[in-house]
Every structure is written in structure tokens, then in C-alpha cells.
Image (cartoon, rainbow, N blue to C red; front, top):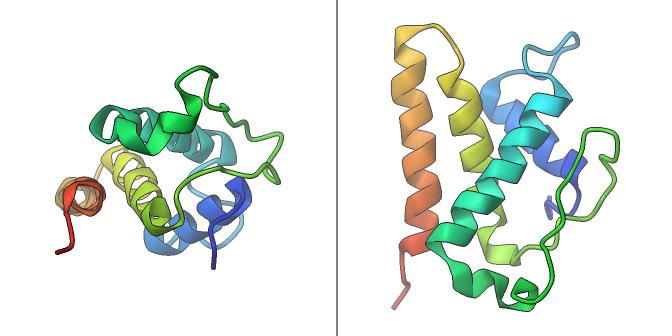
Amino acid sequence: MTLATVQEYLNEARVLLQDTRVPYRYSDASLVSELNLGILETRKMRPDLFVKYYRTEYPTFSASALGDAVPFELIYRSALVYYIVGKAGLRDEEENEDTRAGKFLAKHARQLLTVEG
């Protein structure tokens, strides 16, 4: 999967969240909100990935337009999925979910900050 659209990000996140059956535990709107926050966090950590958007605003996504393209560097797209999953997992009330969520958030950061040599 290329993770080109908002819907594709949500689909991939739902697999990792084990939330693939309707009715979903996590609404589209809540996961899209996490995607938007993930982009902001990523921009803070790696502003170089957003050079194209220094003079223009990066798009904000909504649950009413799941077919919208997410213009993001291909090799870092999975990091956004990990952020969505981590933030959604933090909302779960089970004790072990905080640990799992933290691991996904750490994986997001690691993927963005690791330099292959």
C-alpha cells in the first residue's frame, strides 16, 4: 500500500489498532484528527520534509474528504501511521494499551530521526 490518501492511512491504522470491523471503535473523524496532529508533530521534528510548504500552508484533512491525497515523502509515510495508532491507543482505558501506544509513538520518532548510513 502506498498510503497516498487519507482513507489509506485510516485503513492501515485500523489494521494495527485491530479495529477493522464495523462499528469501529475509533471514528474516522478521530483518526483523521490524529493524522493532522501527526503531521504537525512530524513538521516539528523534521521541518526539512516540509520545505515545499514554507510559504504555503500544508493541507489539513477532514473525515468528509477521505479521498484527499496526503502529500508526504514516501519513505516516511509509515511513520504517520504509527503516530495515528499511538495517539489513538492512548485513549484506550486498558493498562497495557499505554505501553503499546508509547511504542508506536517512539517508532514514529525513530523512523523520522534515524539516518541510514
